[in-house]
Amino acid sequence: MVFRYLSARGQTMNLEYAEWLAGHLVKRIEPFLKRVEIAGSIRRKREFVGDIEIVAVPYMNPDLFSDEATPILDPLRLELQKLGSIVKGGNRYIRVHLTKPDQHADIFLVWPPATWGSIFAIRTGPHDLGKYVVTKMQEKGFKHSEGRAIRIDDGTPIATDTEAQFFALAGLECPKPEHRDHLAKIVWDR
Image (cartoon, rainbow, N blue to C red; front, side):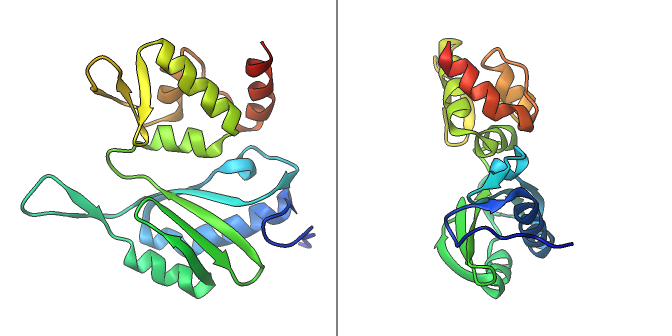
């Protein structure tokens, strides 16, 4: 299969090439993660893609003396360093500059208090749709904080383990990723 790379890092590449590149990255890092999925404009099937966004759940190392656990990220970071250089290397977000091709990838790590559905929906985007959903959630008595939904009145966490649960808090059905760009335009044009 032949892929046409359109431009340098930070600009656009066609969807077919972006899917191939993201899929290659996922295959390399998935042994070090509990769960990993491609998000962003690749998941939305945009014709041209500006970056690679991955959402992942790391394995956790429990603390024997408390209920806290910490993510196990060193094996993931070592694998990413084989593919390029880590530009940002936090515990919830890693940006890696891939050497070949000259492109970057963003990896968003989901672990408590953050929940999968909230982060996956927001990182799939587009930004305007996420902003709209969070605004609608607030109207219904919920807010989005630390990657999870909570009740505004008492701070109780609300389950958003799936995207459907996240959208439901705003009174919306979960749209297919490939419809979200169009939906974002419609909801803000009202």
